[in-house]
Image 1 (tube, rainbow, N blue to C red):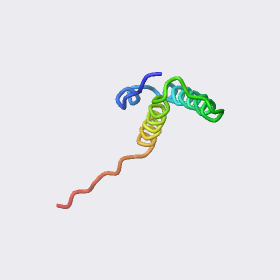
Image 2 (cartoon, one colour; image 1 turned 60 degrees about the vertical axis):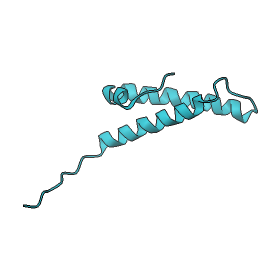
Image 3 (cartoon, rainbow, N blue to C red; image 1 turned 45 degrees about the vertical axis):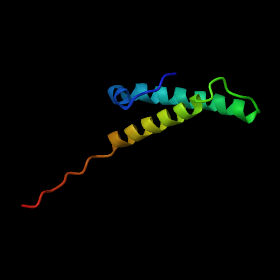
Length: 75
């Protein structure tokens, strides 16, 4: 699974983002299972990449849900 950039995530619709997040979590769970059993994952750096991508997705989802406050200018 490739790294998702922020602009790619923002360009996806909500159902695609949720589906990708679920896939990433499943993949991370598999890798953590290998680590827990004492094995070495095939791609060691992939764990960090997946965690960062999950965090990026959750951050963007939070930004979409939270309304932007308007700043009142003093005149």
